[in-house]
Image 1 (cartoon, helix red, strand yellow):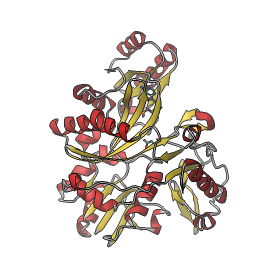
Image 2: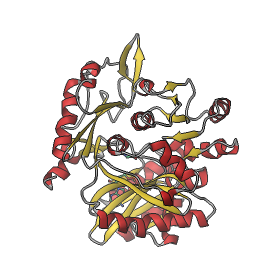
Image 3: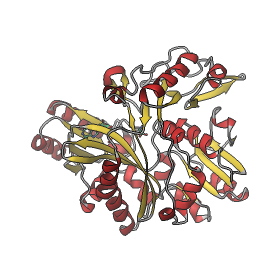
Image 4: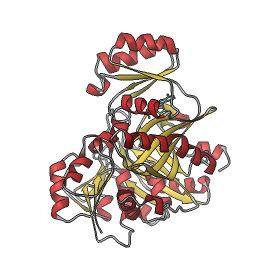
Length: 424
Ligand code: AMP
Ligand code: GLY
């Protein structure tokens, strides 16, 4: 099997590592990849948004499967472009990727399909948005409609904060065109989990569930980030909860997409809030989570390309994913300054020593400079451990973190604290 993987972050390193284990694999290319991915794949000088370049390469090299990691190319229609050339693409087309690309679209779909989510309204006019905030009362959440690199959801503790958030999105245009429309929604109380399902049109099978850590500092303090660490499985998602999420959320969502002319093929990421009234949707994403994919891939026993092809060939009713019974936990190491402006070019030491330890260090934002691996981007590495329980996985992950050094590294020391408080 000849596989082309699109993307170059930590999620894609985990996907590349897993794809490379497939006994059916003949060739793996990554566009653009990164120095970690380069251990498992041939990295191409092609960007994830170069649809024509990617299509030409994939056709010319008789690629059997294209796996798209990040959301931006999917929302921009890369899946449609490649499929138009007859390629097998794991990842939804633009119409279905709008479930992540437009929060207004996702909320309207949920309302139509009767999927539980926060009470909301959508606005193009700031005055009307402010009036609705007064009707809802604080706390509430203001969300830019479009993609905003994980920064477009603003949790507001007061109506003053809500007014400012609306100004940031709609008047000051801090998120560009993504903020011309906003969704204002009720604040939900509960515990969050990231739930992944493999989807082929109207058929969906559950994958693993994980828990992310959004804020930059320990004890869940500080500004939100793309995610500072994650573990899987998620203790609150037991078999009963998994069945409930599939029945109440995933199945009606994929049915509504298919009926609406936007059939979904790929991984559907459901950001869940487990409230006292049951599971509700915080957001949908049209791809695996980052850093959730790193621990999830360490637990996956099944052949990943085979699962992807089963989804594309409409054979999902005949497959189920097999999982390692152990827990996996990943700690993100970010660059100096994260989550604000970061510094590139800090030399990363200790990667060879870490490679001799149990567990796995995935590269997110790294580059090669004069033969040395240096920081290149916000989140730099994700160190993942595997263990009989979350506590053991965490010990292995932090042993890897302690083996790696670069100036100004930003990371949390308490990844997994919620599971540990439960005694997991
Ligand atoms: P989103 O970009 O929609 O995933 O939101 C980012 C983060 O904001 C989520 O992971 C939650 O922690 C928080 N959040 C978003 N919407 C809500 C909500 N309605 N109630 C409570 N927290 C929320
Ligand atoms: N870790 C959150 C995300 O991938 O969106």
